[in-house]
Image (cartoon, rainbow, N blue to C red):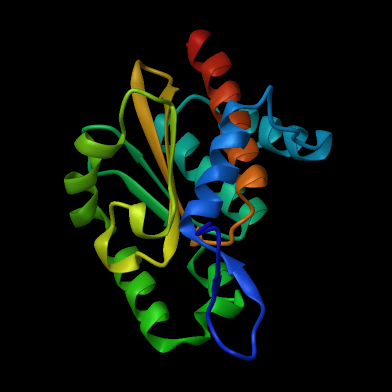
Amino acid sequence: AGYLMHLHTSSGRVPTTKAYRLYVDNIMAGPGIYVPEATKIKIHKAITDAGNDPEELNRVVANIVSVLSDNIVVTNIKDSDHFYKTGLSSLFESPEFRQFDRVFNVANVFDHFERMFSQIENEFFGLDDISVFIGNENPIKNIREESVILAKYPLPGRKTGTMTIIGSMRMNYEKNLGLVKCVINELKIKSANH
């Protein structure tokens, strides 16, 4: 039914974009994503310790989410050029990135993300706090084999932060969406107080 594909005669079947989309839609529509208590504590501590400077908070958020997800994370303050990028080397430890062209394309996006961001920001950071684009759905044209999670969240001083997570199509969506939701909740609480 279009949910599995056979890449090589010697390999097993792998999920298609359609299969991952069904899976992610079910997670997003579910009652809530389980986040381990230890993860919640790490995120809470990192955000609490970061103080109230929006740029410092964005840097801390990028680092903690990248470490916990092993994916690329880019954070930004809306309407500014303050980008913080991390996680390139940990992503490249995934087996998908043994192909040179994929490494090159992802590294190129990482290096030139600021330029691409203005093209995707207005169109794809929509009404929802979190959007997931899988494989060829994703707005960054030259990494159509990867998946992208986009999130926006409040920062102190009435600023809005954005986060872009870039990972392989077989990323752990449930874990990553749990991380993002946890970060958004923490920042909503923090921003309400400042």
